[in-house]
Length: 599
Image (cartoon, rainbow, N blue to C red; front, side):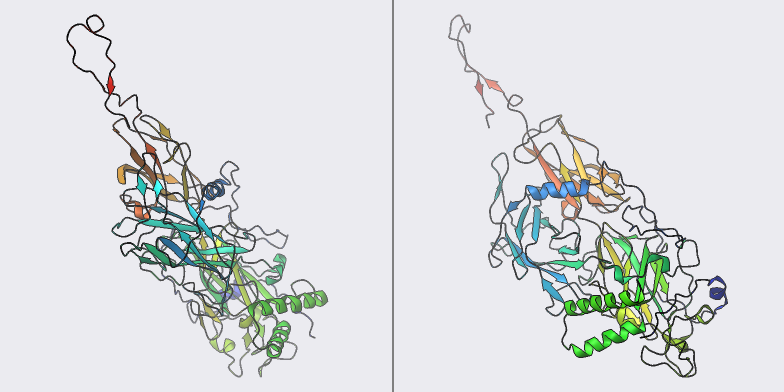
């Protein structure tokens, strides 16, 4: 067994300036416009050492007053939800399947080779009709095979006795929203909560769902609930931080050294995708916020451990993801016990996301054509060790493609791991579904020869937007003229503008107001006073919209809540008297007035 390689020095300012750039780093994604990143409390905190001089991303302190508002709102809705399991073949149902993605990248359908069904997950649903009636919350629990169905056949009855039914036929404004209760927040990220749409959606802006609005059927099928392992759950996926390779630039953004032996991609706070876009991935578009300042860390295994794992694969044909992950843990633990913490990794490089949401991560590489092929110009002493400062070249194709006569180098692409350093967000990755070293090349990434690794992307998913009118509702707590409704909001992207719009019986009233979310996704909403001109039962609905969205319809709102206002009996009392001859009380008996507006 060879001695573990020594981490090379990081004095590359002069070197980077001297290397001529033969090829610019390709940009494969679409969102390149500059936008200010949100300040967020979610950046992962890694213990700082004297060797770590690079500033970490912003770590703004949280405000205890609104720290858990999103969780509180979600918990309150779920606590009062109606358990309503159903038959997926029945009418007036919502049904689908839940699974954990263990392998691959696409998220638009269950694949038995890549995915594992998950039982015991609570799936929640709320609907709103075209008249602005917002339903109660319903839920069911996934079965052993991951399937679930919610029965929505029972009508809801409002305070005046009016029935409201789950009927999507003939109602173009009918919309639903779904979310799930994460069964293990310490282990899983929730990367799809039914339909890959934030908030409410109609038949026209659904993604993977299929709506059957045939009269008398009124059912929705093909809901998809997908979880993925949280990233960086294993500390053996990176070297100790003091040994990370860092950019020579104070902002942590690497200068462009070339296209070979590097990884790159985009990181963004996702705020939902447009109708008609692909449902097999989260898309980086103009509706999202670039995760500027977020740090991304990447590692790959050394040649010793690469050979050990390659041999293990040959001896264990037909292994599963769980088998490989267990083998890595066992082999790496043994190797570290002999050679020291982090010795199994060739290099761990940290990069910072720039103002375009893009990160660029160049590796030195290891001398030698591969882990098992030295190459003609490499000495035995050089082979398997990190490329030295004087030989660093990420712009020389022939040195990375194994051309004879060159000072060749390689990275062990089959055993890589790249992840953003951020907490408190569900993270979708298109390359590393499981906490183990693996090849980033797949359907959604763009990996070409000579270790030109592009489009390793990460979507930071906001929690589901939540809104709650705290003092009135549609059944028991009825409001009257002049009463003031108080609203609480949570589950938003941090430090981002949204719109609040009120509706009266499904029609927008007044202009929307702009709110700005806090670092923890909460927001302050102005109180709403019930107007004096109501003459009977009136439904008032408050809605959250993305900034720039049309607020005149409820069907594209992020979240909704409603309450009923009515006219008190005393106000509607209009007395009437029978005509009598003579003076009342003298010539006749006293007359009792008749209430003409009893309800």
